[in-house]
Image (cartoon, rainbow, N blue to C red; front, side, top):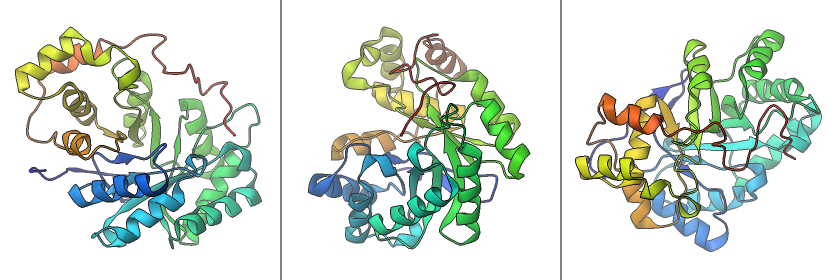
Amino acid sequence: MGNPIPEFTLNDGLKLPAIGLGTYSLKGNDGVRAITNAIDIGYRLIDSAYNYENEGTVGEAIRRSSVPREKLLITSKLPGRYHEYDQAVTAIQESLYRANLDYYDLYLIHWPNPIQDKYVEAWQALIDAKKWGLVRSIGVCNFLPEHLARLEKETGVKPSINQIELHPYFNQKELRSFHQEHNIQTESWSPLFRAKDSDLFSNDALQDIAHKHNKTVSQVILRWHYQLGSIAIPKSASPERQLENISIFDFELDNSDMNTISSLTRPDGRIQNQDPAVYEEF
């Protein structure tokens, strides 16, 4: 890997590496091998979710890896169907049982589900789970500024992190500014868009920047995330691609590069039009 991975410090003091591994769709023996390989080559932040149905796979990879549990940072997420307080507490416990872990380093509310409007109740369950030692740090995914402000207003506790859709076609400038103003860490899901299903990697401007730095387009995009101050969690089962994705700390994009990548954003840039103001996930 070469250069060490820098860290970001959350508002509760937990330190997270600047890049992690997404695990969506990594399941079974193949998933275990992919995650174990990622850990062995240097990944320490592993992102899962209750609804990915692979917390057991992640737990098995942890047990098989050569890295002690305490040096890893494992994330999971609460699904929308369990936002009621008692159900949320049980779901967190179930997440731990599935992975055979004593604690999660980071536990997040997966979506705010504003129509059912129980995310504050779910947040209180996460607050208590942290008090009980089940979780080290608590945060959210896909929350808008009004959702984030309401959590702090009604519970006195703000999220340490907000994991959001963020990629060159949807740069989330306004939400990132809100995070920075309120000391909430940004984390990027689908940081490379959906590379196989898009024209992003054939973009001439991105290819020019990659050629300029003697890097791949994916490395350039992931470096852009890092310089924006966001933690990217790209998913890959390929050992070669995993190594490529994590090898982004030996070069730097200049202001022109950063502005060019950010300028690719689109008003309709979301991958599946999942607007947190109305989208409901269960």
